[in-house]
Image 1 (cartoon, one colour):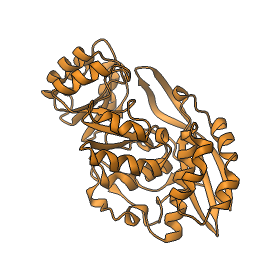
Image 2 (spheres, rainbow, N blue to C red):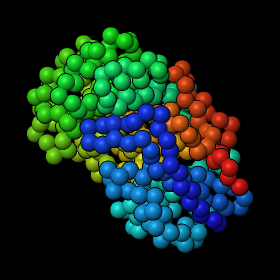
Image 3 (cartoon, one colour):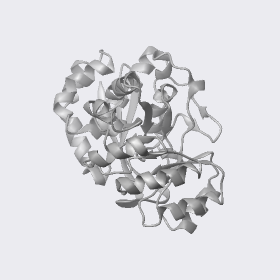
Image 4 (tube, rainbow, N blue to C red):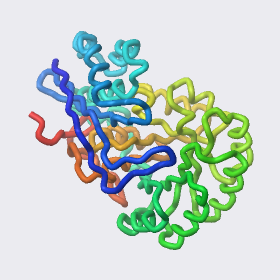
Length: 339
């Protein structure tokens, strides 16, 4: 068995700006796990907002290489349980490794993961395409440059409703709104009624995580479904969200990979919550893993590779009409220039 680390600087097509940060380049770590002539790939974006660097992920993963080697013949969820005690505070690194182990497992079983899970790829929901915070003119340009049936609009300014009204003049596509915890409860309630008339599908985490009283008020009075993001990080959060949100957005990097994400999706469904998996700014390596889960979801946000100038691999391809799964097994990923 061999584990290797591949560092990338992913160049974004446009500056990506949300309410608390902006970036033009996304550092990323791709992990490859090879065994018996087969290689699996996984990825995690090194997100400074969460204090994650490529170097910190590599350092964390090097601590568990021997554990992985000792259990490499076992299914990925078993290996995850073995390495979790060492990586429970390093979920981005854990995600990249778990993703690679799932890809390896699928390739060794000679099946795509969605087939191993008995999922129908024809049931994949449309992914949103993200429009980051910018001047209204710049946001309009991005929409015109990239026609798409469903946009996620990042907000968090002092003129958010005006932005949406202006964007609506230039496209009939459905909008989803992600205010990244920038609104107050009464503001969010008022906005929800206006936004519903502007063909907005749902609100994603408009309130601060600790504003439970406000979140309850919003949950009860919003004209639109409210989806948890920052409030739903790890498995234990799903049940907490049930009385405050209509659905949950699960990020593989935040929860620690495919293994816990599968459990979180099942738990959310059991509680009657809508399910969504979102991305950070991953390349096709990470997006192809998310795509394996997509047929079991109500919503999906897997536009990361669409936002890039340079990619790392071939794999699942996303168009405005459908998701095209490759013939390769596992997650379907083939890393560029990998030997």
